[in-house]
Length: 65
Image 1: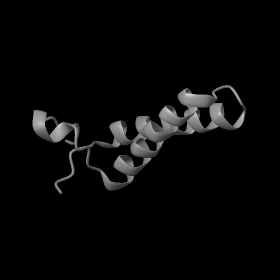
Image 2: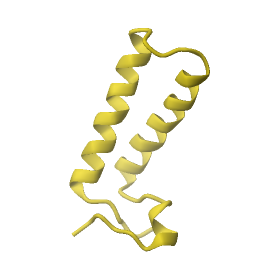
Image 3: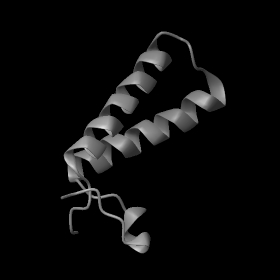
Image 4: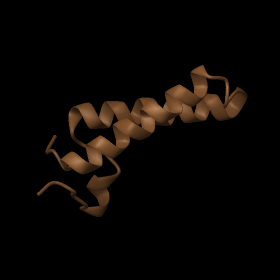
């Protein structure tokens, strides 16, 4: 897959995933919200590591310079 995520985009996603993890482990989010946000955090980390966001492809969006 062609990389379509820039450094800033990837960094923001990782920071958001870390914030979600901190909120979960401190008990600030629980139940269904914790599950949904956990899935989103996992997707953010995965897409950041790979450098490709599948949702950007149909739109033709790229944050990579």
